[in-house]
Amino acid sequence: MTAQVTVGTARPVVPYLAGGVGLYHAAFNRFDHTMPRFYHRRVMGAALQPGTTITFTDPSLAGGGGVSLFLSRHWTIRPEVIATLFIRDSRSLS
Image (cartoon, rainbow, N blue to C red):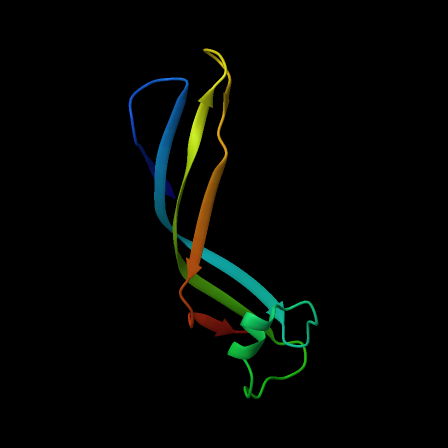
């Protein structure tokens, strides 16, 4: 969930800032070779049985900005850049 704040007045080009919070959920098989290194390091050393599913639910913070380009009354182009930060160590094993 994000919120946007316009930085300026109504005109054909309007910059804005965005920020928000959320949850990121990921699930992997313990021996899944496609698991990103970020998650693989978090389960290193755990004594898990083959076929064990590992799930991660991590809170996240997002922030960024962009520009609204009003082409007409009904059309807008809105390029933006958003960075997301995941806070780690909310995991469960099943």
